[in-house]
Image 1: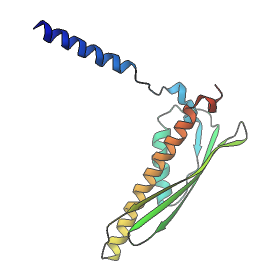
Image 2: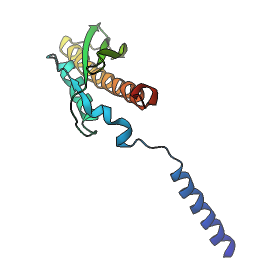
Image 3: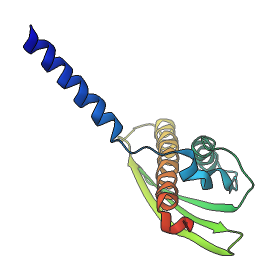
Image 4: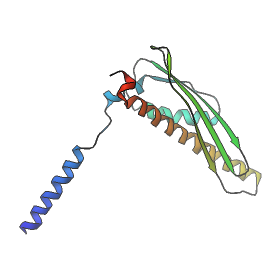
Amino acid sequence: MRIYLSSLIIAFSLILAGCTSIERLHSPEVTELGQISLKVASSRSDQIFSQQLYRYLNRHQAQDIRYYLTTSISKTKSDSSVSMTLKYNLYDQTKGKILLADTINQSATFGAVSSLYGQDKAATFASERLATQLADKLYLKILAYFNNKENTGE
């Protein structure tokens, strides 16, 4: 019984020790994400992209706008695939320079559909998935940029 109890205490202690070593993101470390303004475009893919990105950015406390994020999504479609390219610029208005500028490419395939309606719907759903994935990737790139202390001037 003592062996069982002592092994349980040791296991519980190791679990607690492991939890304390996990590095977490704290709001003070990523306050810049609450200072980003995003220009909303008009196409359906752009709207889905911006809604997903807003969900991520709204997790951070809103502050005075310092950064402007401009994005442009271009899409190409074939009979069984859709490709999207996101071009973005993150501009710091206080420094007067572009902090991040890059492109992200994503593609999705869908099964061959015999009807034109089904093919169009499959392409629409693939485009919506890609727009969400592009927002995910862009958020992670911006988060990684601001988590680097050299970029924030600290």
